Image (cartoon, rainbow, N blue to C red; front, side, top):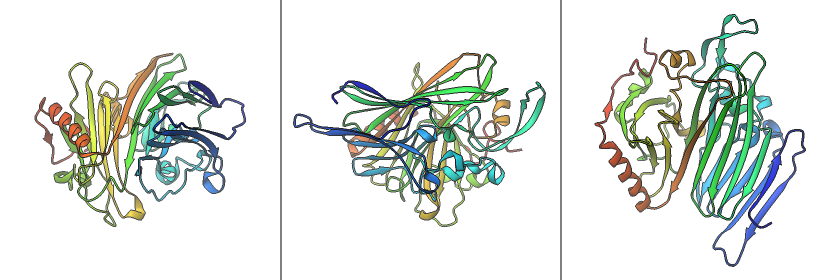
Length: 393
């Protein structure tokens, strides 16, 4: 099949089929392929996978798990991490209420996973309206629901220059939020980059709260002793007392350490004038491999760095997390004015680009961009949690 073309991979009330498309031409210096299949056996049973290869970058997208990206590979370098959760877990096997609202973690192993749509962040109590319009307190679970909702529509488009995968997922209920996510994952042929464009729509008539966080997770080989996070910022503060213990090295990484307890740091980033475009770079110790996030602070005004440099078998990982708010409880974030509200029928579109860099020249160029943005303000690093960002009472 010759580009351009579109193929519906999954539609409501349809049967999922196997797809395998590929092209290698003597006149083309690269090959590309797309295939879809369904996993069988154990907790992964029934999980649909769409694998995309653009000639350089490989992505394994999971329509069954909110269109998250399970694994990725750029050239010979794997992206993502080695979670204790070894296979994608079908949402049917996830109980979000487990372990005090931490059940989300039983399926947590993706490279790129969304948190939201109605809530995200730490588990905790919040007040909502019941079916009679009465205010009631209910427990909200870790990072919301979207990662454990299957897509009901998936479409593949291949143009002369790019591969695009689109999906549609609904987080809806009677007498509750009715939100729809439409996502597009685009990668150009022979490129080490991809762009994710998400549109969230309130399908109802009443206003509804909306939160979104991208949990983008890296382990070895990019994460290693001597690896570093670089980003232009006004302010960085530790999330809690445990994080404050490591604030002196918040942007540096050590080797796997058995028994390490996670740390997190909240950033107020700097962006370009006008567009408010910003960036965050994770590079290896040698400075010849890196992954670069580009996004606008208009879309994601908050950024969190998560460090969990535990033993390799326990999940040696760091997370770069652009978001609409910080991953505290929704009640706390609402009090700080950081929870968005979508009116009836209102939509909000965001975009993030991930560039995987594989030369010292490319890494140095990205570092230079960051240094240029940093000139806009003197960076401040707080030794302790700040009340503006964390619930430190």
